[in-house]
Image 1 (cartoon, rainbow, N blue to C red):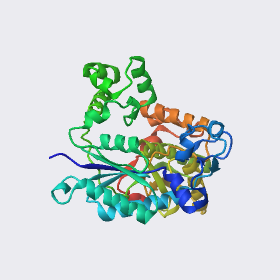
Image 2: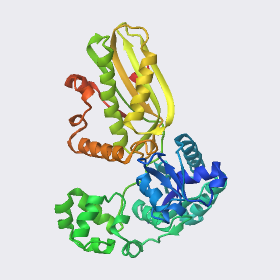
Image 3: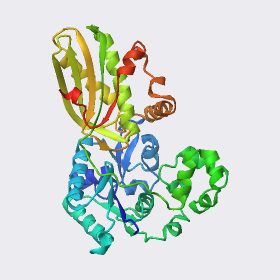
Image 4: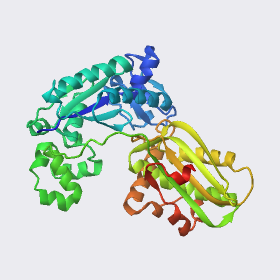
Length: 402
């Protein structure tokens, strides 16, 4: 039996939330992002996209293309609340769903056709989301995640599209290769140099050649070009965290050393966060004194995966927490309240140079290891301490809570 995989994607999510909260913004070209000339576009309305504006574009260029656009700062707290609202609506109706990011979802509706029709059910769910959240959302359904996601993007906004089983190749063939999810700029450029511009042409490439050129990714490319994707819908759960801690060989009162270790911890857990394409909304710092008294402080923040944001919060928590001036035997950091998302750094506050820098740093860490690129302030942190900074993924580490 063919699967029925639904992809739901909120249309221009940040913009839609702003317009819901501020109705006067409806119909205008709208850009959400950094206010300075060196800022970056986090999101933009379809009216602004008509002029060529897109996310991650430098703000000065966006305003050259669309000088009449209204520019506003982002409000991640408001976006997070509305994301939770839509999640709850879906959770009340869907048999199994996956939250792929702050504004998109997958639902496995396989088997529903024997009752009243999976696509009919999906359309009814979309109408329910629009009514209860007052936000626009698009959907597409096919036999797998890849085809559904491509279809949603192709027919947005206000999409309701069904790609019947067996028609995947016909749908994908005329599309440009850039439509394939996770196909990066370098890969696209390499394929363009070989004259490969459409999915149909990519499909005709010999699989051994793609493997020799791209390794295992060549198999993935070939499968997606052929409309093949066996990736399952992963049941959604928010009860997860990423944490790390270190126990010292000798108890210390050296605040500079402690802060250097915390910085190294942030580098590690924030990178893990971005590798998993997740955002955190709750940060906890833990210290254990030499007499084994253990204290923690935590704070809830707007969703982020930025080193700079997380580090600033952790340093503030540590300053409030460490007030007894006793020797310390252990420090720890936990990121919780996680959701899927790809906001690598703060698009609202950082510049294009910041974004490019952090993308390059993450690329190096991914390729050579997280410890191969570190801040100068953490160079004094020993390898032994770094080895002790085990990163706990999945369920919350009990040792960090207790």
